[in-house]
Image (cartoon, rainbow, N blue to C red; front, side, top):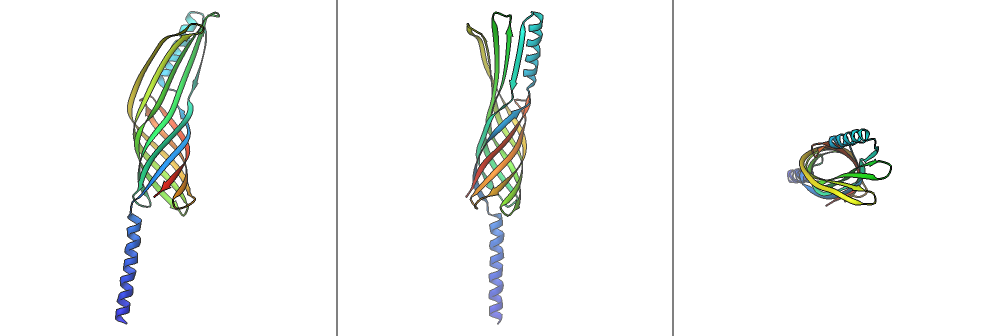
Length: 217
């Protein structure tokens, strides 16, 4: 009887230890998301628009402008789930391009000015997870090295380009986000997220709403 009791205790202890080890065993995953970015108007765009408007008014020119702050965006990466509640992931993200256009006209000739800023780069996120069976709630904070390439072009209709330039700004950018996932299988999850990248190019914030897939292995 004592021998059987001892054996039962040892088996139970081994099962508990196995469960605990499984809970802390890291698990890897790959992910890919696509969505839409929405950027605040950069200060330099606001200033440029104001200056062009004043110049047009001083010279009696017609003036019009528009700013497109939305674009397609995506991210891909890999992560490690340290335990049920904490993960660490690394990613490449492309936040798309913002575009500003302005037109000055004297009624005969039209001058077009165009400024674009595209942002992409690499970074890492710490991810908190609150699991509910197949459903999970996610929260994350991140730090990323993002490069914004600004292109400027001035042209006259019927004549062509007569001035253009390009410059780039690389900054470390912080981010935060929330999201949720649903597991179709233990390996495949559907993920929806909203993230904000702060002070991109040390100028403006960019929101990124996305949906994607996560593959656990």
